[in-house]
Length: 134
Image (cartoon, rainbow, N blue to C red; front, side, top):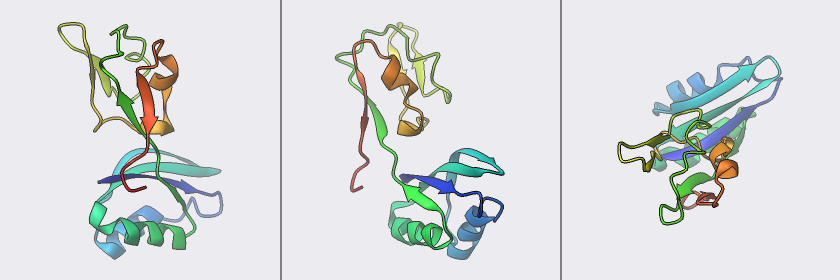
């Protein structure tokens, strides 16, 4: 799966673009986060690697902007387990284990669309990285 960030302008935000593409291409798209109002919207989604080019082309054809957000990586050798990042994570991708160490779940992380943990880390153990092949 490849994570993509879709942006919809005010002119197209009311069109059912995501559902149309899912139905037309018969492809499973996993929506991770979505913020939409009458001024526009953003959707962060996972798309299967094997249909990525086709899905991206379809969204762009319908007027959506498609980008590839960076992922977050934690350098556990630098991490001091201070917990400064835990409370800030809106999707609970960072938790504290029973031994007080920090546990990072890449599957839950929404990546650079948030980055609250990157800015909060006092020792810079958390950074944004590019997705493979993008």
